[in-house]
Length: 321
Image 1: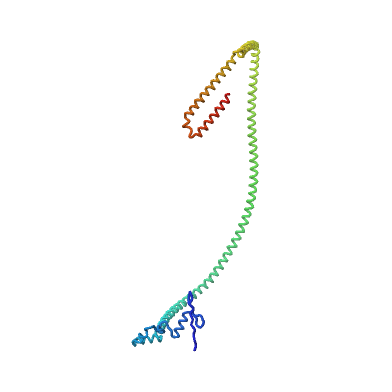
Image 2: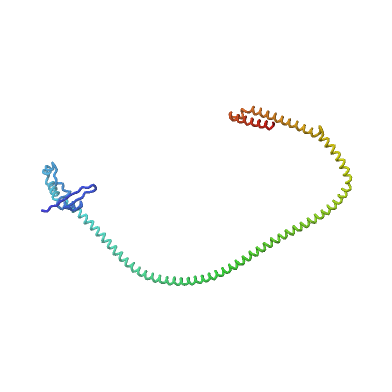
């Protein structure tokens, strides 16, 4: 007698099933048990306590229903309904496939027509491209010839332009040199004009000086005559003045003369001036003492000011002595 070993291994994520040490899925295990007569819809493999009395007290209809459940008729009915549903689904899918097949046939016919049109279009397109290539090639050759002609013209014009540029450069250099020479000549001309003006002015001034010298010579001769004429009178006047000078000098240098009187007056005036300055200094000191409370904010400022005044007084006294 053959034996079958069914083992279930419980894991954290999912359970694993083995039949004779071969790994199988849960669905395969359920199908194998149902084929052997063990169905999930049959609850009578294990009879609960108190169920036997209920089974014994069943009516005929209930017993017939129980027998059908135990025999697996319910499973058959369920499987039959599922199979019929699958059959209907397959029939619908077949109809859909037939419709798709017809659509594909129609599309194939359309594609054949489009293929023929595409072949004709490709032939015409090849001819069009060949014609376009021919036209483009002719235009390219013509453009190249025109470009070569234009390059030759451009080179000739460039050579002519370089030659003209050289002439223009030479002309510009000559023009600048001429302008420089003209500027120098103009500067020399201006300088010569200035020198001529200076010479004219010098000549005029010399003429004026000559005239003045002539006039001065005449005046000098006239004055010399007058001086010689009055020379005798001046000798007499000189002697008189020398006598008066001797008298005035005796009056100035003698005892109780004007010089001693001037010295005494000057000393008296200096003493008066010193006395006046001392009075003014005392007045200022009194005024400072009177307004000292309002001038100084603290004792330190007052002592500093008094020391400064004492130093000034000592300096002034030292100078006076």
